[in-house]
Image (cartoon, rainbow, N blue to C red; front, side, top):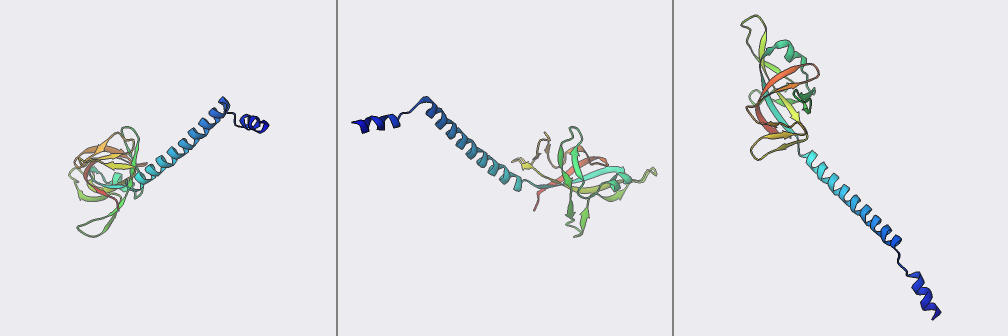
Length: 168
């Protein structure tokens, strides 16, 4: 009989034991949640890069000369980063284009104004079913034909989006 009494004393369960068990379970659940959440975010980031082709209408040629490949591009209205100026291959000529390239001169007033075309690589972007591109925390949906003001570290540009393609 003495062995049964000592066995019952060893198997006692207290409120402190319950609290410790609950804390361990919550910690394990939190760890599993963080791992799953991180895996989902990593998966989203790898498939979320898009090339956004655009035109700059009638701007001064010196402004286009200030924009370089890989310059960061920010939305002017709220200073949120959209991506960076990209390098792309022109389908008509087969040549690689860096940053903005002047395509036509509109030098009617001696002001040396030009029209240019370019490409920016948007990261952390999601393509919507309607064809619009939602970029990060910008609060804007980019669609072909839309006009927006963007800036780099050296230039302010008004661009018209011509097309959006998945970055490969």
